[in-house]
Amino acid sequence: MVKIAPSILSADFCQLGKDIQAISTADWVHVDVMDGMFVPNITIGVPVLQSIRKHTDMFLDTHLMVEKPGRFVAPFVKAGADLLTVHLEADMPPAIQAALEEMDTLGVKKGIALRPITAAEAVLPYLEKGLDLILVMTVEPGFGGQAFMEHQLPKIAAIRSYIEKYCPGCHLEVDGGINAQTGKQCVDAGADVLVAGSAVYGAADIPAAIAALRGDLKG
Ligand code: DX5
Ligand code: ZN
Image (cartoon, rainbow, N blue to C red; front, side, top):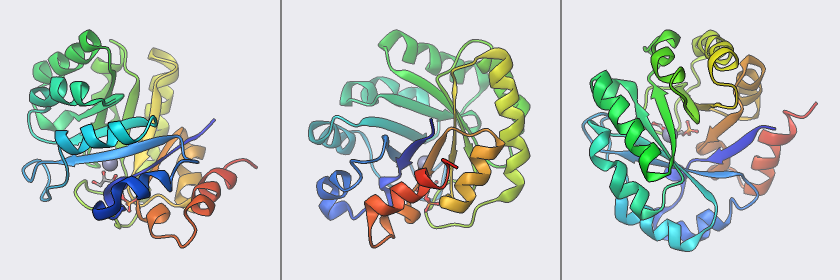
């Protein structure tokens, strides 16, 4: 069953509570945390996630686009994140591994994310140790509303085969330029979690947009 995770990056931050309520038919809330260093944009941080947590019981899928993300594992867990995803490019491998181990210790689900340039094989050392999610970026991280990179599809398929071999049950999420059509391409390649920002919040009818992402995938 495919999960839909609308990205609140495309929400109106002045009415965030209302905009989160509007996606209650989705599965997860995707929270994009950016530090202005790992990516050229600054979004939201720990206090905002804490407020979101008070407002909803939905699963908070937290995508950390920050340098040296290990610094923020404990604060985001304390604030109420359900899953933390760290970018492999954001620190040296031992530090990424240590961040994942801290997630285990603190009882939060753990994921790794890959920029478009990072090869599928990069997930292997982490996947063999166990992961809850791998996130394949289908745009350059930093901004919503960009065009889907079709050349990421073979990478999605390769990672799906690694997951089946080494860690069945690990989710495979895609993020960037996802709509009903590109989402279907990703699911056909092996993805099972679709992040969508502008395709959900840019729609006149948000529940219908979520249903389209889901419904087109059923046939
Ligand atoms: C981009 C973020 C995405 C973004 C997706 O760096 O990670 O989650 O919000 O937005 P769309 O769906 O508009 O490409
Ligand atoms: Zn994201």
